[in-house]
Image 1 (tube, rainbow, N blue to C red):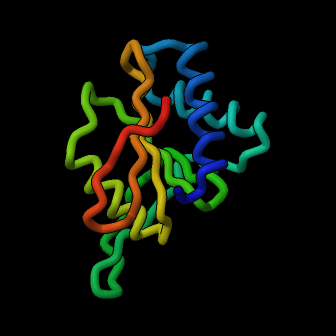
Image 2 (cartoon, one colour):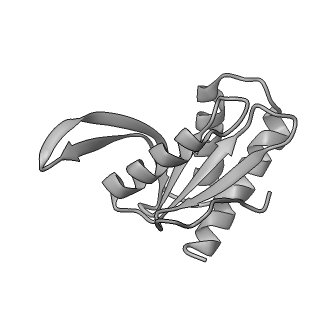
Length: 131
């Protein structure tokens, strides 16, 4: 598994944040709490990273990502009730633009924390991460 140890650190941080804050808060509260939790764990997280999307060498614009961990793992916080197939597609596009291989989708708004691992490997089915 790619970046197994670092991925586990992010999952542990997400569990701590969800346990302490619970569900139902605004998106930015969880993002800021994750930044604090990761920093305290000694993990470098670039928050609100802008990702340029290109087509045939031409910049089309930018998309924002919640945070990028150690320049290795993309993390997106999901506000929807369910993580849709479109979200997986968008995440793979972001992985490609950032030239990364692994992303975690974190959904804090349920009674239970939902974490999904997404890899930039075509044709590989996404499975929930250990939460």
